[in-house]
Amino acid sequence: MVREEIPGLGIATVYRAINDLVEEEWLKPVELPGRNNSYELSELGHHHHFICNECDKVYDLHGCPGQMKDLVPEGFKAKAHDITIYGVCSDCNEPQQEVPAGSPEQLPG
Ligand SMILES: [Zn+2]
Ligand SMILES: [Zn+2]
Ligand SMILES: [Zn+2]
Image (cartoon, rainbow, N blue to C red; front, side, top):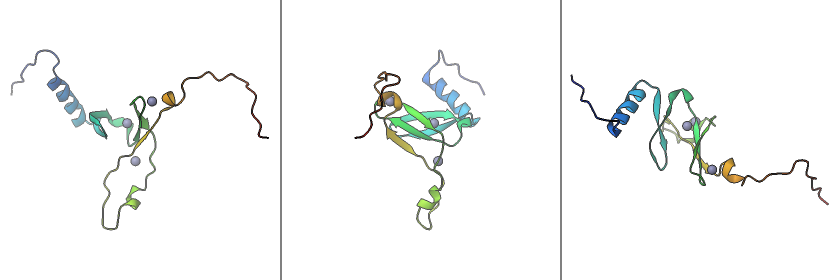
């Protein structure tokens, strides 16, 4: 077999490289709504994602509620699950205001 030489780093080369990495289980495809062809390092293991509605960043969530098998009806078989949480990340949540240190607490009453 003769390998064709592709001039430059075409997108086909990139896909081939990714495919190789997936086959060698360095990378695994990750399904993210609205995002095509996302891949992650396999060594990250099973985890879930948080998508910030503001900055559109994807954050890895380390942890899993587990017990998804209990959610499926009798006679169904759960094989995998994905959890994507949407919201606002801490960067976007706080508009980076400087909180003065030692500000007096407001006591009720
Ligand atoms: Zn954000
Ligand atoms: Zn991830
Ligand atoms: Zn999980």
